Length: 490
Image (cartoon, rainbow, N blue to C red; front, side, top):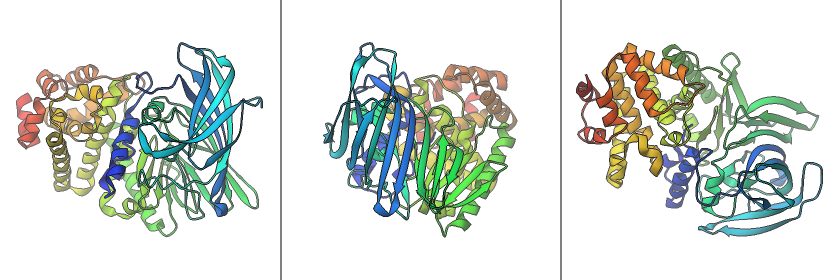
């Protein structure tokens, strides 16, 4: 999955937004089983959310039924939830309607004083035993105006023009304490969800999940979505979208009124990139579909499983169409062992290089070379800022959360490998690797073994210098041509 703030980082925003952008990049890479300071004793394993958007009043009425599981070794008697600062909790019960005592206060994050949140502490009686689960239902209501004073892109709101609900604005309860560390730790767990959103007639709601049904009355419409698979975030947008879709490819574009023409262009780009990757590497497996959702300018482009929120500027800019190639490429990712995933190699390095191949196919060799040069230059800039970006092997990125380098140096490693083994072998290698590790977990040793078998040659020096060592950083600093670098390994 792409970093949820990769496009935000390209915008000219305040330093505080860049700080939070980097933080949310780390959130994207967290996975279950990784211990992080600030973690709570419990996690949410399923959300059942009901949103009623009162657009003229700029407010919502909501209900969140959450399945909470105690993952600690001790009984848990109190569960902390974070909500947006202007939301008022009306009632807390279990799934049988039994009232649970709670306390709600507006507090500052202990380690980020500029961020105010509602802290809702729910008491359990009896305490929740280790390994057991309990259902907690929160009813709440209020206005949402985002956090632009802290994170300039978080302009989430409930409005007649455009409404957006994201975890970035705490639009739904997050099980965490009132600290940045705890909020970050909460994103290491994954959950399933079901979301129902009621809006006035004439509005369209879109979510990253699978559309289940739409219930309509004379005055309202309720859109129901369910998660395709366990995930770490829920995004819900509502507007008078113009929907452009290709039912055969399951690709849907949700354009702000007036941008339908751009929506048609983006749909065509998504279709051709999907066809290109399918022809290159085979079918994407169980592809559920893909949604491209336009959001107002300045609200931040983000992406997760099978969807992207794309700002209006990016949506309308033909020069940024290749960003979509990157997102579509994620449909050809493999499963990765816990921990290794945080290297971001098997998702972001692959998607970044696949994006380059699509640019080469649709825009030509010169555009491809310029793209790869930009990636190399971005890596060298990160190297200059911090030498550890150059001295840390790709296989060790997870130890220091340096996975952002997989977008750049990681993509170059695949570029060089492509030159070493040749085009036909590279295609066969990648397509076979994607099939083999679609259902079982990959790691770097497994990738080397698979590559050597496909290429019928020893690639030990390549993997020592590019994956398990850092000699490759010197080669990139010398700005050698990929073909010239490849001669070292032939």
